[in-house]
Amino acid sequence: MKSIDRARQLVILSGKGGTGKTSLCAAFAHLSSQPAYALPTVFVDADVDAANLSLVLKPEPSPPHEFLGGVLAEINPDLCTACGACVPVCRYDAILPDARRESVYWIDPIACDGCAACSYACPTGAIRMVQQQEGLWYQSITPFGTLFHAELFPGRENSGKLVTLIKQYARLWADDSHAPVVIIDGPPGIGCPVISACAGADLALIVAESTLSGVHDLKRIVQTTTHFRIPTLVVINKADIYPEGVTQIQSVCRELGIALIGQIPFDRTVTDAMVAGEPVTVYRREAPSSRAFSAIWEIVFDRLITPGGTHDRS
Image 1 (cartoon, one colour):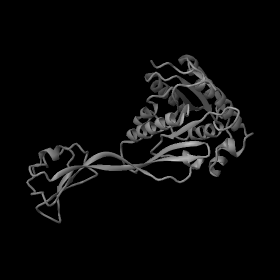
Image 2 (cartoon, rainbow, N blue to C red):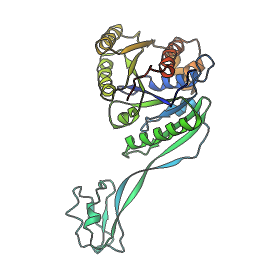
Image 3 (tube, rainbow, N blue to C red):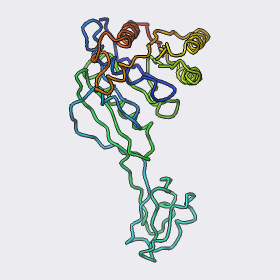
Image 4 (cartoon, one colour):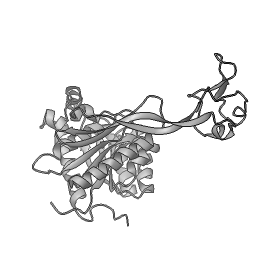
């Protein structure tokens, strides 16, 4: 293997959930540990709203780390005089009289936006801003390498911030352990978590479906990777279900100058492997999907280790 000066980041994206990103990432995890195309790799599950890569890679139990996100206002009832100075400055109507104590106000944590205007307006210093725990993140050991993954608590925000956090730890771990590659199982769509997952990436691999909506989703994702100047590759999943969709995706890739590097057939083995909690390339190595994943990994492997194979961001 040629020397790589720093860990290169591959982000796997899709326009929506359920296109096969995690199945592909899990297969890459297994293939990266095999002799033919071995590549010491650190993995990141950046879909913190619905993380599931750990269900397939089966990491050893690891202690959780707190993720502290935004702040919310909190009133100290012993200092509050119910003067009402905080009420008019709150744009979210989050400050209400306390029915249990007439001389005290309280703050609805669901309505509070954490702007701190009430804290500045309070003449007695009764309101403080309290940082909130919004999730947990983990550094886990799998049979195929180190996995960084996280869980955002239901209804919480700052998923982009949590993605950035686990990516930073993954990159530092890769540098310390001399792992040449970080593979990121990205969130679906084009929102804030996706932008965080794309930040600093050297290569993007888009999983597209051969459907009418899949063509539209592909164009949206390509706009995102193009904006951030990330070299992009495309694979088509369930390619044999709708041949016309394949033709349309091929046309889009030619028009945009993007390499289409593989087509994955519809294969029930993928579902069986997910139910069994294994990468499909482990579950049934000779399955049609496994052979397609292996062929795609060969190409991605070459792009990741070959100097000049990824875009020089300088």
